[in-house]
Amino acid sequence: MAPRSEGLAHCKLALVFAVLMDLLGVLSMLLGVFASLEVQGRDFGDLLVYTGALLVLFSMGGWVIWYSGNIEGLAVAKPSRGTMGHAFDRLARNLSRKIRLPRAQSSP
Image (cartoon, rainbow, N blue to C red; front, side):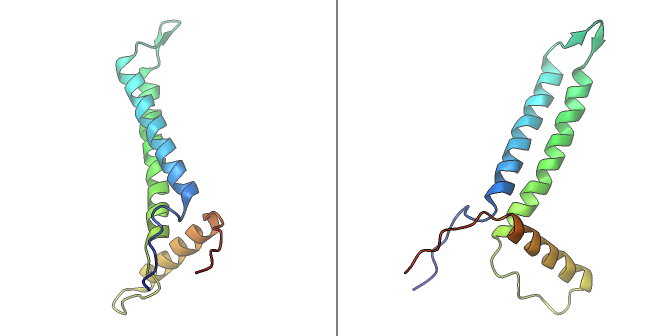
Protein backbone atom coordinates (compact mmCIF):
# COMPACT_ATOMS: atom_id res chain seq x y z
CA MET A 1 0.00 0.00 0.00
CA ALA A 2 1.38 3.43 -0.96
CA PRO A 3 2.04 5.96 1.82
CA ARG A 4 -0.75 8.44 2.30
CA SER A 5 0.00 12.07 1.46
CA GLU A 6 -0.17 14.25 4.54
CA GLY A 7 -0.66 17.60 2.80
CA LEU A 8 0.40 20.45 5.10
CA ALA A 9 1.30 18.21 8.04
CA HIS A 10 4.99 19.13 8.22
CA CYS A 11 6.27 22.45 9.58
CA LYS A 12 2.93 23.98 10.50
CA LEU A 13 4.62 26.65 12.60
CA ALA A 14 6.70 27.84 9.63
CA LEU A 15 3.57 27.93 7.45
CA VAL A 16 1.65 30.00 10.00
CA PHE A 17 4.62 32.36 10.38
CA ALA A 18 4.95 32.83 6.61
CA VAL A 19 1.25 33.48 6.03
CA LEU A 20 1.03 35.86 9.01
CA MET A 21 4.08 37.85 7.89
CA ASP A 22 2.68 38.06 4.35
CA LEU A 23 -0.66 39.35 5.58
CA LEU A 24 0.87 41.87 7.97
CA GLY A 25 3.40 43.01 5.36
CA VAL A 26 0.85 43.55 2.61
CA LEU A 27 -1.52 45.30 5.02
CA SER A 28 1.28 47.57 6.20
CA MET A 29 2.31 48.42 2.65
CA LEU A 30 -1.26 49.18 1.60
CA LEU A 31 -1.79 51.40 4.64
CA GLY A 32 1.45 53.22 3.94
CA VAL A 33 0.51 53.87 0.32
CA PHE A 34 -3.17 54.69 0.57
CA ALA A 35 -3.75 56.06 4.10
CA SER A 36 -2.82 59.58 5.08
CA LEU A 37 -0.90 59.00 8.29
CA GLU A 38 0.42 62.27 9.68
CA VAL A 39 1.41 62.89 13.27
CA GLN A 40 2.38 66.47 14.18
CA GLY A 41 3.00 67.28 10.53
CA ARG A 42 5.20 64.23 9.83
CA ASP A 43 4.15 61.60 7.33
CA PHE A 44 4.62 57.98 8.41
CA GLY A 45 3.52 56.36 5.15
CA ASP A 46 7.09 55.57 4.06
CA LEU A 47 7.81 53.87 7.37
CA LEU A 48 4.83 51.56 6.89
CA VAL A 49 5.80 50.78 3.29
CA TYR A 50 9.36 49.85 4.27
CA THR A 51 8.18 47.88 7.30
CA GLY A 52 5.74 45.97 5.11
CA ALA A 53 8.47 45.14 2.63
CA LEU A 54 10.67 43.81 5.44
CA LEU A 55 7.83 41.67 6.79
CA VAL A 56 7.27 40.16 3.35
CA LEU A 57 11.01 39.51 3.13
CA PHE A 58 10.94 37.72 6.51
CA SER A 59 8.01 35.63 5.30
CA MET A 60 10.21 34.30 2.51
CA GLY A 61 12.36 32.59 5.14
CA GLY A 62 9.26 30.92 6.54
CA TRP A 63 8.20 29.76 3.09
CA VAL A 64 11.64 28.30 2.39
CA ILE A 65 11.66 26.40 5.70
CA TRP A 66 8.10 25.15 5.15
CA TYR A 67 8.84 24.06 1.59
CA SER A 68 12.11 22.33 2.45
CA GLY A 69 10.42 20.55 5.34
CA ASN A 70 7.74 19.15 3.02
CA ILE A 71 10.09 17.83 0.36
CA GLU A 72 10.33 14.07 0.51
CA GLY A 73 13.48 12.26 -0.50
CA LEU A 74 16.13 14.86 0.29
CA ALA A 75 18.41 12.15 1.66
CA VAL A 76 19.42 11.08 -1.86
CA ALA A 77 21.86 13.65 -3.20
CA LYS A 78 23.55 13.77 -6.57
CA PRO A 79 27.29 13.09 -6.39
CA SER A 80 28.05 15.99 -8.77
CA ARG A 81 26.96 18.60 -6.22
CA GLY A 82 29.53 20.35 -4.06
CA THR A 83 29.82 20.11 -0.31
CA MET A 84 27.99 23.43 0.14
CA GLY A 85 24.84 21.93 -1.37
CA HIS A 86 25.01 18.95 0.97
CA ALA A 87 25.53 21.23 3.98
CA PHE A 88 22.54 23.40 3.01
CA ASP A 89 20.30 20.35 2.51
CA ARG A 90 21.35 18.94 5.88
CA LEU A 91 20.78 22.30 7.60
CA ALA A 92 17.32 22.70 6.05
CA ARG A 93 16.31 19.16 7.04
CA ASN A 94 17.56 19.53 10.61
CA LEU A 95 15.91 22.92 11.07
CA SER A 96 12.57 21.75 9.71
CA ARG A 97 12.67 18.63 11.90
CA LYS A 98 13.25 20.74 15.01
CA ILE A 99 10.27 23.03 14.40
CA ARG A 100 7.86 20.32 13.28
CA LEU A 101 4.90 19.89 15.53
CA PRO A 102 4.65 16.42 17.03
CA ARG A 103 2.37 14.18 15.02
CA ALA A 104 0.11 11.57 16.52
CA GLN A 105 1.24 8.04 15.65
CA SER A 106 -1.50 6.12 13.92
CA SER A 107 -1.58 2.37 13.63
CA PRO A 108 -2.23 0.86 10.16
